[in-house]
Image (cartoon, rainbow, N blue to C red; front, side, top):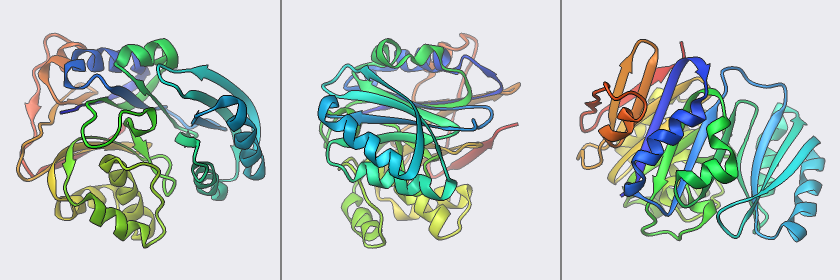
Length: 302
């Protein structure tokens, strides 16, 4: 059992604080890890990367070397996490055609893992509850217009910072996914996508959702809505997941309807989540509706 959350607002606010409150209220659904993907109202004129390093002393020179092959490096800050990993936060200038290549080359290193690489989005995740995101990642001070969040109960994959949600994809770095459930045909999906050139970094079944959606949108020219809808036929198991791009949030609930997704939309505010209690953390007067089994919904900014 994991917890998922999503939020979209009309005007940019302190989104990190609102998402922190939502995740805090569903910490009972999983306290092994927590994570967020936060999207800005407007893209910046530079990229921000968040990359985990297993050994900062040995891995930072490697990271710098790879970045300098594809981009112009600006700031590079290190911060500790609630795990053995160190996080690097980098700002850089990079040609659009090289962003996916840079993402992939960093991830090719066994001791490096890209959490996000984008001009409009950043992923903050850590071992433990949302308190770790606030203490180490500065979550509560981050502003934005829409975001996803997750609390993780590690079941079939290991309790590790890099296995925490949200997941993104080198094929389309702006897309992120948070997931509650289990894909029982994960290895079949993985083999199929890897045969077409997709590279997975972890053995978490949730990562394959990000790659699947990105592949559909970049290689098969599907829209976001179409990719989400196709997943209902291609995924086996019990699952509910949220996905986001720089302008949209989508929600998918499998046809069995075992894993819940609730939603609330009113007056420029959209909230999504696993439980009513997380909505009340934003506004105690909110009462959420439940998505139907097999339902797909997409919301766009403005």
